[in-house]
Amino acid sequence: MNTNDKTLKFKTNINCGGCVTKVTPFLNDEDGICHWEVDTTTQDKILSVYSEGITEEEVIQKVQDAGFKIETLKSK
Image (cartoon, rainbow, N blue to C red; front, side, top):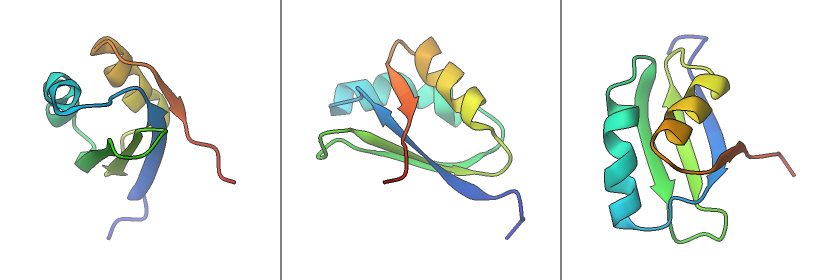
């Protein structure tokens, strides 16, 4: 595992399968993402991005480009 690899977590408003479908091309076409998923069952609609070099800022921009709200999930 590369030392740059990490899991980035974000609070979003991606709340259904249709939303996931809409954001999919924005994240799938991005270099630096190994895998990503959205837990639409939680209140915060957590987006987990398994990074291979992409930054939090780049993920935020991609999700905003897809038309969704996103913010870095703060550790509790």
